Length: 366
Image 1 (spheres, one colour):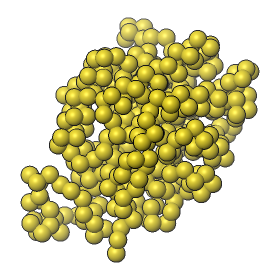
Image 2 (cartoon, one colour):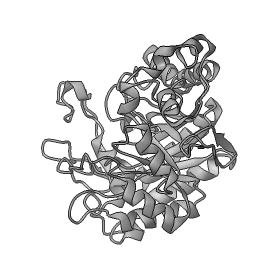
Image 3 (cartoon, rainbow, N blue to C red):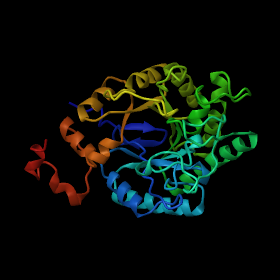
Image 4 (tube, rainbow, N blue to C red):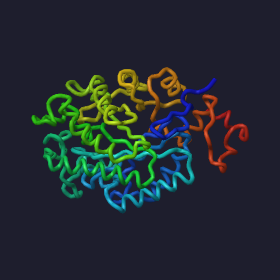
């Protein structure tokens, strides 16, 4: 039987060898926005994970748009040069195509690394001013952002365009915008964080206006053959927040703007946001967006084993699945999924003897 998960998919001019994607995972380990040897090691490992596509962590388009002091950037020549080194390394040794997620942290910027507390930076931790659609902090104890004016919006739009151009020059095979998890673009769309009374607030159409402006200008900066997507929010998981209805409308707007796919995530709009840990908890919204918009859909969220991922694809609930912590737990998740589903993925010749039929232990591994 042919595996649906291991069938190819084409996005714009890019063909992926399977439907498995390594989701963006922040490492909080860059040097003032610049990738380093940690990223070479981490991403080089995941480039040989068996996934068809590897998306780099949220990579910020402004220095003051980073989440933490350790977050990656694409706003300078030094950032671009370091990323080019990583991309060339991963393409030379790995099999996955490479994508990058362009981001701006908005009111969640100027925060501590997770292992430092994941709170807003204190006065002695070199904090910086933050911006957002409205002057509302992310939660108690967080910095109050400055409400963005037209000049801010023009600067950020330009920063996303410049970041996209750098991504193309760097050699990425795909680009996506981070429009989820409470960061700047998501915070414009959610009524919980956008209380503006101008043309960029109010109705859903108004709240989507700025993100869609960024989307259209970014699309214009990227050749049509390079797929452009967005990670969007399926639900805020809070009363009065975004729902599946809003996800459908945003996906329609992105499709009209020339986007090739959306990735359905959820939550994180405020510190009060909580989400379930049920297997595939974003899949129902993903299935709905796929059916009601016709855009290619990737889903993420507690997708752990091969059979679960296979069902999602085989039953038409999504076109791709993305996994994050599962790949940290098992950097060869794609190899093992292929074995479980009777499929094959390329491995480095140096590792070929760890695969069946050259190693009998492969059949015994639990």
